[in-house]
Length: 618
Ligand code: GTP
Ligand code: SPV
Ligand code: MN
Image 1 (cartoon, rainbow, N blue to C red):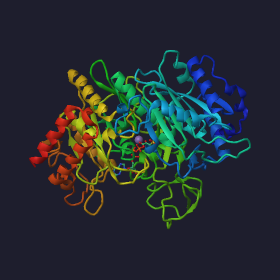
Image 2 (cartoon, rainbow, N blue to C red):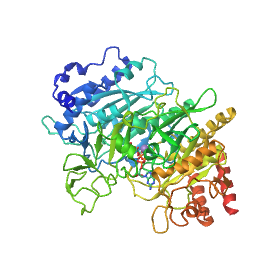
Image 3 (spheres, helix red, strand yellow):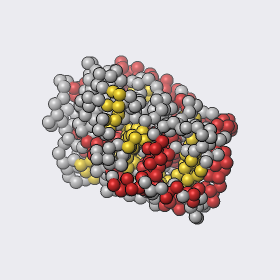
């Protein structure tokens, strides 16, 4: 805290040299920034170097501006609370656009506007949009600096909150900038909150604009984001680059950019596995990535919690890196009984957004403790008591923290070669139908399971919470090209892996199946280690499975359930297959596929026919 106070009062960083590009900067980047500066007309341009001094200065300015509240350093060292504009609290999927030259390349699951039309609209909005503000230039690497799997990007933004957050979430700064030499590919990401200041006009704590555009140009690897400062709308390295643009790069270059956590698991016999798992937003990735096994002998370590880049290597193994350097995690539901690892990670150096503030100057959210403090300041800055009719923290309130601070990071999480994937898991939030765990019959069946994920909507994006929607590969909001082409790409990658005989096994899980009274049938969290154990014993050839209508499932006693007190008949209910409900589900899948016309791979049409045959035989 003392070092922090010193840095906060160090005014020397106001140096005018900030406006100059660092010596040796790729002229392409300099020219691009100059062009943007002419368009946006900010007061100053700052090239960020990712240093602690720079972060201190940005935080100091934001505290002065009211954007950040510094938390009590005795309780939460060097940590801050941001309260967003109440209309800027989550990703806006209805304002997210894939501007491919051909509409069919965006596909029916994306919003499309022709690139020229979008450029004209954005050009108009951008004119003078940073007036009165600073334009920060953020050069970063997604993935370890010298990994062949990594890619570079440069984001400009007029939000110091976005600059600081990007410094936590990516490998940002001088080292990345030096590596973007002429000829090196880099993604161009442009962000403005869209709130220019007239001379003398006072700024607000969270500038934003009612009009929002989160636009992607996959062919030219460009992103333009206007009007929001929240999460995936504004931290463009994350969903916009590492998923939407990267998925298009990956399609062209033969790899995969996925909405997946990455785990390292060691079994009681000492064998090490790596697992990639795709669950939709707010459906349990961060929690599984930080799992504390409830069963003895198993060790789980964290490689990544949200995004994975996967590529077959020369030996036909599927290698994966976590392109991020931090976590932008859901706060509500994160507590000692659910995710102690996350609680430990958040001890300090954390930016919290839209959580509640305690009277002692610390943070609180629903689920951090069983009972709330008797008085809080809620996420909108209002006085709050437990009798209030709304939660103290916004349901999509989040923490931003460096991954390096997580005590369970594995020793190989920054391995430039990536980790070798042994198993892939797809999941969703389903109160009915989908069993606790199923193993796919083969890769193509696994791709079908991924392609047909449906899940109840959460607070991570606008929309009606609880409404069921298709979220193929947990990528519905994040695939930068036609989703059906993404399925074909997965089938192609499978063909490539099959030639070497190193095909990861694919599984489907559902932690969220409910009993008739609405309670969860499965306790989840640490107990998910029991499911993970069966999955990895399958990979190890050490666990039995029975062929069922949906795939392979654990027979009676194959799931390690010792010491677990499940409600009566819970196991039966967790694996129950209701033929009429499944027939309706498959009818829906047929309609869903039909929406993609003839781009649906024949192999997936065949899987749907097989699924119907299996259900008909129940
Ligand atoms: P994004 O960051 O939006 O991509 O979310 P995520 O997929 O990382 O989800 P996260 O792990 O943050 O969990 C979201 C919510 O689901 C939290 O409120 C968790 O407490 C809850 N959750 C996670 N795992 C389980 C589980 O096994 N069972 C139950 N019942 N809830 C869970
Ligand atoms: C998600 O919605 O999947 C997130 C949060 O991880 S955001 O970064 O806002 O996309
Ligand atoms: Mn996510």
